[in-house]
Amino acid sequence: MPITPDTKNWTWVLDAPCPDCGYDASTITALAVPDMIRANAAAWPAVLERTDVAVRPDDSTWSPLEYAAHVRDVFRIFDTRLALILTEDEPEFENWDQDATAVAERYGEQDPARVAEELTDAASVLAAAFEAVPDDAWQRRGLRSDGAAFTTETLAKYFIHDPVHHLWDVR
Image (cartoon, rainbow, N blue to C red):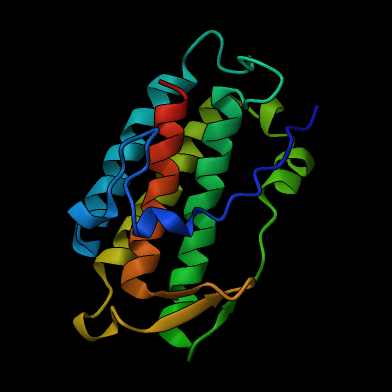
């Protein structure tokens, strides 16, 4: 059963701490993001070993398995977006409907062990990609399909909130 889509514009996390998970973009640097990715990814396999991993806590909240599959895909999507911002002049990022993807890919029915492996692999690729950003590329710009503008630096700080928040969601 699909969850009611989240329609918030989460770019506000670049300007204010998240009142739920406590993420505060003003306290980190983009150079810290690769280690944050790896630490976040390292926490998910234990979540995915829970006996209730596929159980939704209520009708409006994803199960830990669904959150993990989403985080895996977030790592993949932002690897693509990072590559675009580094190789094209002001690229527009293709819209990604995360809720439609969750339904189409049947997140809640995926194998937790495979999700853990894929999430860890995707995190490793993205962490290495952020580590390889040249010093002079942190201010390159890209645009989300809704017009929100990011630099490489703000893209990193915006992106990392998502896996941090979702690990908080499944605490």
